Image 1 (cartoon, one colour):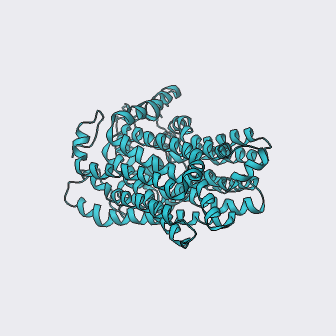
Image 2: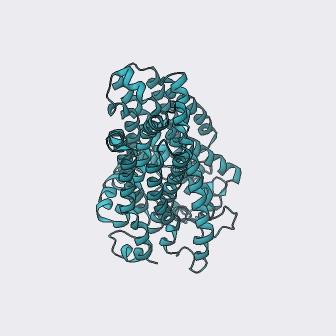
Image 3: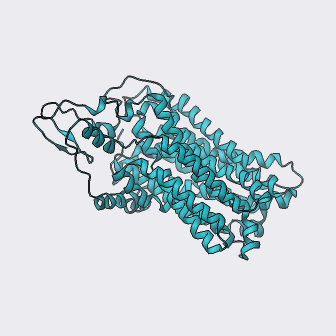
Length: 502
């Protein structure tokens, strides 16, 4: 990711989304509409959106950073709610009389809802703007989390958890769109890294906070804590303004006495979003090697991470005799590893990717150079899993497997950020959103399923062999980014979708 720096604007560094809206219309030139079409007018006053102070690209840096803080805090709150209930697994079994597998449903159903929520939230953000999505997320997410804390039914708990995640999910999905609407491409490197880091820090820190709450207050307080975080998040959302360009343009045109374009029909937006967000992603999973291979790789490692939310307590309590709280503190290694992964991506970008950029015309850098940190991550993943599996034994200091956990989280985040950057550079226009949706679809399905069989696998195979199975999966998928680095251009040329040709 490139360093954040203030560069003079030009049409060369103007993103596609602004070029579509950047229309100068003095004396009868076209007025841009929400879908990029135009309406003429012979007596239209001079006005240019690109230079208007209401354009988010022209906001002062502090205002952009407030927006970044808002989307990062929302993503952190919504993702922390995922794993904060993982230490309550045993309490669920005792209080509700459910099996070990069923006791993971409050965790798994929340993860599943994160993949389902954007189907409705996406069209809403395209019609009413981003801010309404962010207002709904902590409000309804917090209300349903409050209901979770007061429920006395396990079925009710599962339903409320699913609904809480469902309303938080769209805010995670549209965050990258918000960044595209306020930062120029040359400025997005560090903000994008911070935004991606926040939903990974949430699951890592969730169990750390959850163990103290479960141990001292009981599992309902994990949900009340989510409510408190939601209130804090809502304050930031209220402070942060709207960023969606078509909505802001319509408001600005009305202020200037110009005829504002009509909004597209809601059902047409829903139809388009279902195509981009559901049907096309499913097609790309099975027909696009880049989407399918990278999506499967990320999904397996994402599922492994969520599997550990239950397995770590079993391993460290059983192997070292640690308490619930001591075992929960192990997840600090996951959070620290995510921070290291962000640093790795930055260093690879700074010293490897940027050195290649100079040799190519602007905006024509081969996407494969984005894969440096992914290739580094592929080496860490199987190595760290084998390290962890066979070092987590009474005769070995517990610091040794904890270091392995840190390296796993580092490799996982390096792989994720790098491959998402690569996919974004490979595909063009709405195909980028479809590829990202395909990745999210597989990722959340695996994140839902893996915890449901994790404990049984560890109990039957033991820590060493169970983790070796996970390492074998990572090893089998390891060549993917390396092969794409070497043959990616040929693979792109065979795509049925519009891709980068350079």
